[in-house]
Image (tube, rainbow, N blue to C red; front, side, top):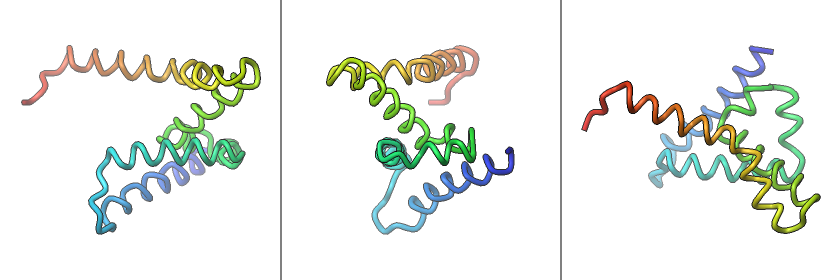
Length: 117
């Protein structure tokens, strides 16, 4: 399972790096972030991302495309229960744990380490 996660996660990261290095238009990490999350949402909404998650585990859920998958699945589930307003509520509640952890650990890192600037 670890090898599958490594290969799939590495392939997703390789695609992002190649996009930044080999395109004539200067693609920044911000472009990659938005693009990969968007691709994750679209591929998940089409039902194609869950088989990748089942195959690779964390190799598919940890990269940015996995965050898009999480948003899409939360929105779809809550939309089925609550209608159109559930789309917004479901995406945010599905990702709230990860977003909270990122903010908390970022804050703690800023307290512990002296930023250069």
